[in-house]
Length: 93
Image: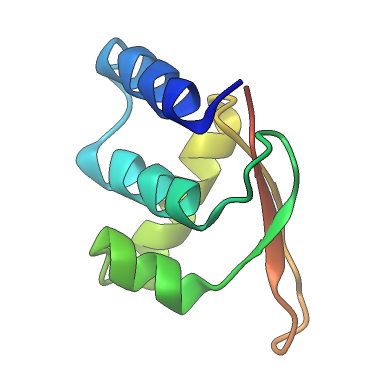
Protein backbone atom coordinates (compact mmCIF):
# COMPACT_ATOMS: atom_id res chain seq x y z
CA UNK A 1 0.00 0.00 0.00
CA UNK A 2 1.36 3.38 -0.90
CA UNK A 3 1.90 5.89 1.87
CA UNK A 4 -0.60 8.34 0.38
CA UNK A 5 -3.26 5.63 0.44
CA UNK A 6 -2.47 4.87 4.08
CA UNK A 7 -2.89 8.53 5.06
CA UNK A 8 -6.10 8.77 3.03
CA UNK A 9 -7.56 5.65 4.65
CA UNK A 10 -6.69 6.90 8.12
CA UNK A 11 -8.30 10.28 7.51
CA UNK A 12 -11.45 8.67 6.09
CA UNK A 13 -11.69 6.32 9.06
CA UNK A 14 -10.92 9.12 11.54
CA UNK A 15 -13.63 11.32 10.03
CA UNK A 16 -16.20 8.69 11.02
CA UNK A 17 -14.72 8.00 14.47
CA UNK A 18 -16.35 10.44 16.89
CA UNK A 19 -14.04 9.34 19.71
CA UNK A 20 -10.95 10.84 18.06
CA UNK A 21 -9.99 14.39 18.94
CA UNK A 22 -7.83 16.71 16.83
CA UNK A 23 -4.89 15.84 19.11
CA UNK A 24 -5.23 12.14 18.17
CA UNK A 25 -5.23 13.01 14.48
CA UNK A 26 -2.27 15.37 14.72
CA UNK A 27 -0.25 12.83 16.71
CA UNK A 28 -1.00 10.09 14.16
CA UNK A 29 0.03 12.40 11.33
CA UNK A 30 3.27 13.23 13.17
CA UNK A 31 3.97 9.50 13.45
CA UNK A 32 3.08 9.09 9.79
CA UNK A 33 5.60 11.80 8.91
CA UNK A 34 8.40 9.96 10.73
CA UNK A 35 7.34 6.45 9.65
CA UNK A 36 9.29 4.25 7.22
CA UNK A 37 8.04 3.52 3.71
CA UNK A 38 6.40 0.21 4.64
CA UNK A 39 3.19 0.42 6.68
CA UNK A 40 3.14 -1.99 9.60
CA UNK A 41 6.88 -1.86 10.26
CA UNK A 42 7.92 -0.79 13.74
CA UNK A 43 10.07 2.31 13.98
CA UNK A 44 11.63 4.29 16.81
CA UNK A 45 9.83 7.40 18.01
CA UNK A 46 11.03 10.41 19.92
CA UNK A 47 8.35 11.83 22.23
CA UNK A 48 9.72 15.37 22.13
CA UNK A 49 9.76 15.45 18.33
CA UNK A 50 6.26 13.99 18.07
CA UNK A 51 4.89 16.42 20.63
CA UNK A 52 6.50 19.39 18.87
CA UNK A 53 5.30 18.27 15.42
CA UNK A 54 1.73 17.55 16.60
CA UNK A 55 1.55 20.70 18.79
CA UNK A 56 0.76 18.69 21.91
CA UNK A 57 2.04 20.56 24.97
CA UNK A 58 1.25 18.13 27.78
CA UNK A 59 2.88 14.75 28.37
CA UNK A 60 -0.42 13.55 29.85
CA UNK A 61 -2.25 14.47 26.64
CA UNK A 62 0.44 12.73 24.58
CA UNK A 63 0.02 9.49 26.54
CA UNK A 64 -3.77 9.78 26.44
CA UNK A 65 -3.62 10.07 22.66
CA UNK A 66 -1.21 7.14 22.36
CA UNK A 67 -3.56 4.99 24.47
CA UNK A 68 -6.55 6.09 22.40
CA UNK A 69 -4.85 5.25 19.10
CA UNK A 70 -3.81 1.83 20.41
CA UNK A 71 -7.28 1.07 21.80
CA UNK A 72 -8.94 1.95 18.49
CA UNK A 73 -6.50 -0.12 16.42
CA UNK A 74 -4.68 2.66 14.59
CA UNK A 75 -1.19 1.92 15.96
CA UNK A 76 0.82 -0.72 17.77
CA UNK A 77 2.89 0.89 20.51
CA UNK A 78 5.74 -0.75 22.40
CA UNK A 79 6.95 1.55 25.17
CA UNK A 80 10.52 1.66 26.34
CA UNK A 81 10.75 1.99 30.08
CA UNK A 82 14.41 2.96 29.76
CA UNK A 83 14.76 6.77 29.97
CA UNK A 84 17.49 6.65 27.33
CA UNK A 85 15.73 4.17 25.04
CA UNK A 86 13.21 4.99 22.36
CA UNK A 87 9.75 3.47 22.17
CA UNK A 88 8.61 1.88 18.93
CA UNK A 89 5.42 2.32 16.95
CA UNK A 90 3.85 0.62 13.95
CA UNK A 91 1.08 2.24 11.97
CA UNK A 92 -1.49 -0.47 11.40
CA UNK A 93 -3.10 -0.99 8.00
